[in-house]
Amino acid sequence: MTSAPQQEVGSFVLDSYAILALLDDEPGGSEVSAILSSGAGELLMTYVNLGEVLYWTMRKRGEDRAGAALLGLEEAGVTFVPAELSLTLEAARIKARHRLSYADAYCAALSRLTGFPVVTGDPEFSQLEGQIPIRWLETAQPAAS
Image 1 (cartoon, rainbow, N blue to C red):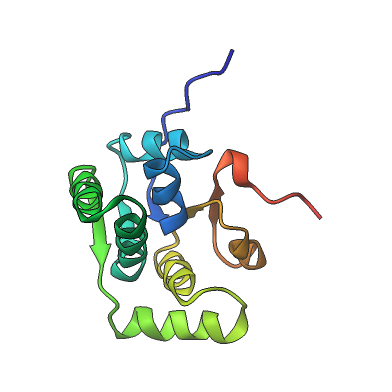
Image 2 (cartoon, one colour; image 1 turned 120 degrees about the vertical axis):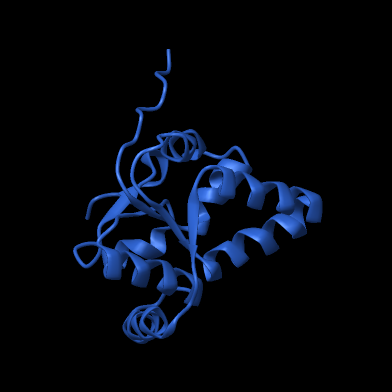
């Protein structure tokens, strides 16, 4: 018997990985759903990461589905953060020092600037453990070394 996901309380930075897990009904998607429906704390996502969700959804499911995804995120109270200078400089610093995608660097930079944990299952973030807080999706947490 599987238990229902715990109700998440707190503020988070959402990685595109987390939203795509929810939209594609992949492992970790129910955890993301619980975070989005918690109603407590701030939910942040950079426009760069939003763009990643939208283009991926357009490719796999079409523009209508991407529009529905955007509407769902807005209705869940997600605040989209523009790539302003301070965020862009921090993303550049992270990207210069680590092998991860540019979009992931923006997500990590927002986490570093706010102190909010990144919600992700993307193994690229494992190299940032101890540098930013990470809320690993349960089924995607990297193995301990």
